[in-house]
Length: 211
Ligand SMILES: Nc1nc2c(ncn2[C@@H]2O[C@H](COP(=O)(O)OP(=O)(O)OP(=O)(O)O)[C@@H](O)[C@H]2O)c(=O)[nH]1
Ligand SMILES: [Mg+2]
Image (cartoon, rainbow, N blue to C red; front, side, top):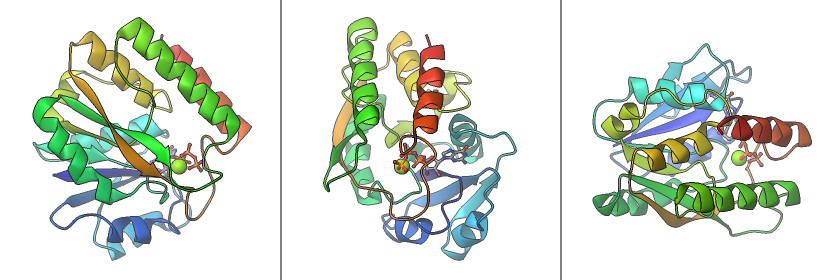
């Protein structure tokens, strides 16, 4: 299995994340334009690095998928907010599903800014009602077979990716399963998405464009 970690300026958090990856998993860090030495830190801690010139979370994820070998691909953030030890449980659930997504459960205080929590709930509700996908979170830890993902075609290049993926998976009739995962504050560095109003606004705009 290959673990793809999209990273933009995560040099501080990345060593802790990489150290927690279960043995035997191959790691691909996808960097696009970090200025803090993220790529060097990744290599130093045993990860392969893919460089993607196009900016954006979705572009980074899709570059990682393209570079990964056939088989199962897992995804998580590089900011220390998710525990790679949750990945094997998601892989087990893939026996009865096409796509397994992590439902983030806060295990320390202050993890969800109010606007992020509300926006997330609203979008998840829309997904359940409109697309019949039984999820309660639009998160970023997921496990899927590479071939399944590639068959969905190109998805949103920026922060719309996580939602676009779920909508397309539903449209393709895939079985989507949700599993609880631990969620913490990022361990180092700055938020690109939910921690700021600017990031949240960009995310909502991208999410809405998904349709
Ligand atoms: N390669 C790449 N990675 C990105 C980009 N934007 C965000 N990321 C990564 O995607 C993950 C999620 O971004 P975060 O900034 O943690 O977003 P968030 O979880 O909503 O915000 P926090 O509250 O700070 O955790 C992190 O690993 C980022 O480094 C991007 O444009 N390119
Ligand atoms: Mg984060």
